[in-house]
Length: 511
Image (cartoon, rainbow, N blue to C red; front, top):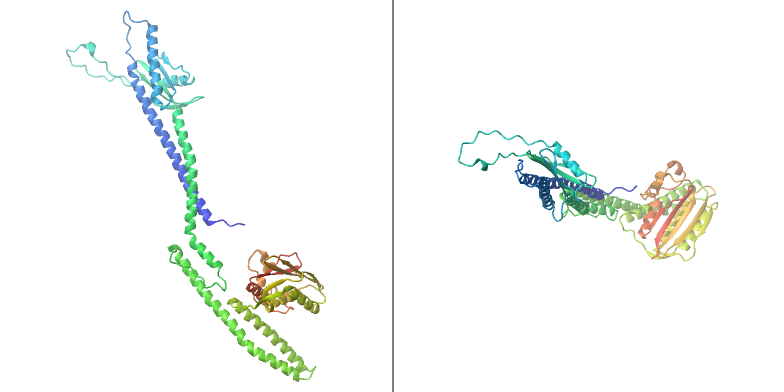
């Protein structure tokens, strides 16, 4: 399972937070702008409703000899038609805005009604309905009688009756959305409907701007958060890089603190102190094992020589000769352990010296096969390699690797089992695979081949004691073989095999 990225999570959370903020701001701004436009439209509509007052002549009986009612109605309709046309251009910006107008007299008779194609057929019904719901203007306030004056009463202005402030509503028809305002005067009633298509067009433009700008802003926020988080996590990457280089040869690595943020200073200081302690411990352990192996090498050599000389002086077949032979075998075994420990200490310190020559691996494999036929004649051996397989390496150390692999293939084989040797050569590397029949390696030893450090290569590790109690060894062979392979810039790995098999592959560079 792929682990989530902390840096990606920071970028996504930042984008989500900024997105919610921008969407909320955009929605609030859109509604504020829309309400501001509607409020301004209501103010203009109120202004035009109040300006309609002069178009209402006072209601009085027509004098004798006045124009006919039909001609008067035609003149009245022309005046209202002109008023409606002026409204259409007054509310528009660059184009003519659809406007509907209904005018009634004091007895609710229709004086004028919009019938142009620009007006919706249903809007007149809405205007009449709105007029029905509009209350009458309040009666004029009673005032004391005016003082007598010498002015002509015919020139006195009648008291001004102001209508109730109109209430504006938004109504929708099948084809458009209208803003409607209506008011009543003492001698007439008027209702005006203004189409909101210009407002809707402006709001659609603003909405499209938000729809384009918000994703762009979110992308910039995400990229910025990605870059900022990358800079903030740079000390973590440095720490990870140093940890990856922490091997026996890389314990001298340290992370500089000079350009580090204060939040990471304590972490880096603790890590540097840990590396310092590890370096000191590894140095002491490597020096101890190397010094111990070196100091024990001389007395063991002397002891082995004395045992060999004494063994030659005793009577053949005697009990003393048998005991001396057993002691000599144990001394030789102890000398082998000391040599392995000395090589491992040199490998830990990075001081394993290699005498590089051209080595014929085909010849070495043939020598190993002869040893197998002599040590385990009951095993079936299959080979699949060609002559002339040459690498650059230390011959003695490569022989030690092969001896260890073939020794394990014999010791851990099944009764009447088999061993297979395969090679595969590329332009740069040589792969030598040794497969043998065996019992399954427990999962605790294989670590399921998931790339983790295999316990089977640990020093002094021999797996299940119940399986290995009768098998000689102390668990240093595979560890030493892998260290020698890595000193040659190669590797030794445990392969994934079917049940009942064990396979090790030695990889060596050709040059």
